[in-house]
Image (tube, rainbow, N blue to C red; front, side, top):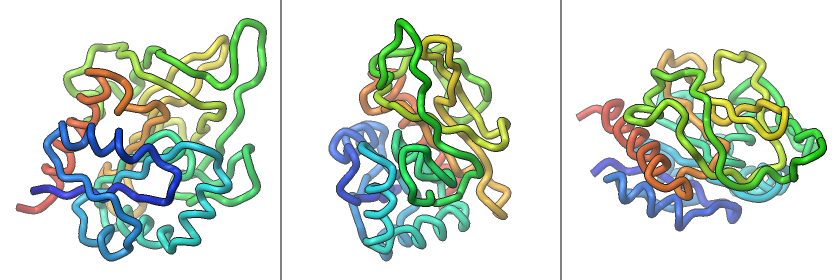
Length: 218
C-alpha cells in the first residue's frame, strides 16, 4: 500500500488529517523519524498554531533536512495550513526563518470594518490553476474551511493554485509548484483545512493520494 508520512512535531491536527487520508485509500504514518520520512512515498506537513514555535519544533527534532530532501527527490508533498506557511522564507508573525522552499513571505490580514481576524469559517475558492491535480472532480468555486490570521504571498504569482477573499482582501488559498531542480509538480499546499472541508476536502485529499500513486514507481 502507498504510505504517506504525516510529520509529527506536536503542532498538527494529526488525527483529522490521518482520517481523511485513510478515507482516500492511503496509509498515513504519523512520525517524527527522518528514516520513516525517507522511506515514505509522500509527505504531509499539517500544522496549527504560531510560525516561530512550529519551525523551531521542526528544527529541534531534526526534521527540516529530511523534508527538504524528500521535496528535492520529487516526492509528493502536501502542506496544510501552517504547513503551507512554513514553506516560505519569512513570516510577519515571528522572527524565525521559514524553510525557504517557496520564495515569498507570510503576511497578516489588514484590519478593516466588517471583518473579523482570524479569518474563520467557510469560504469559496477561486481556482487560478483549474487544471491542478488537486482540483480534479471539483466544482469551479468549491467551499473550504479556514482558520487563519496570516496568509502566504509567493514571490512568483504562478505558484498560486487558488485564492479566496476576506473582506476586500484577496489572498492565496493554495499553491502548486514544481520542486526545486526536479521538474516535477510535487509541491502542493493549502491554507484551509481539507480534513474539515466536507466532501470537497475529502476529494482534495483523494486527489493528492491519486497523485502519489501516479508518481510512485510500481
